[in-house]
Image (cartoon, rainbow, N blue to C red; front, side, top):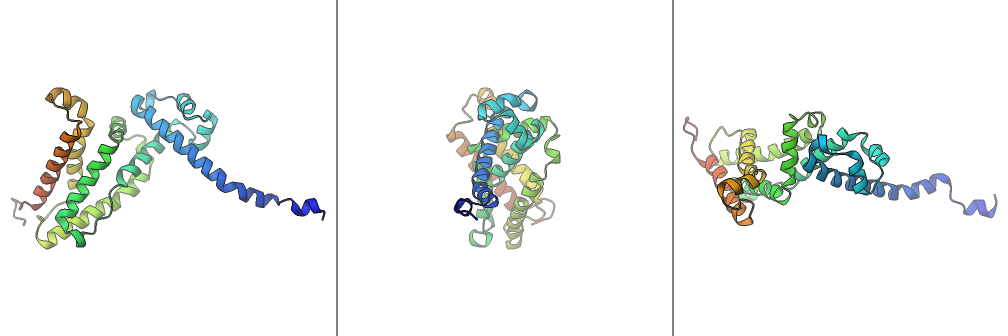
Length: 232
């Protein structure tokens, strides 16, 4: 073996040395493409968004976009999946034993409101996909994997409240989640039309702060009010 041969790294080692960088580069490219794509899907919907425009704005080639996502539909679904991840992620696990069921429920509602206020485009994308009757999201496993732990957390809070005698019996976690989502999200998703029709800036921090406070009071009030059908 010559001196040059001994100094030259083997092909497998050279490949391993560059692999972390390639992984980082791929992750950065995908994140950039998803971020740009989200803006296009929000403003133009699935039908109106163009892959060539997304590729050009992201700074990556159309071929690379297709390499990562295959087609426009897969890219759109990937954007939706990221939306769900970022939407659910802010819900930190609250230790009911430490703060009690009422405060835990308040925290749960406020964190949901905060995630939407921080990124209202989440609701725009969900509205678009609802117009599509969830045709593209239906094949994704991400929402179905994300929501069970979230609902389990809410159910734990409800069960603790019922056990302690501070919440009414018969509260269903799914129905409660849908109800609190409706109360919280409508003000944000309809902020522009509400501002015009009601003659007040419903998108202002002052208005939304008061709306969240009222929403928390409504949700907690429902849970702590004795049932008229013979429950607690």
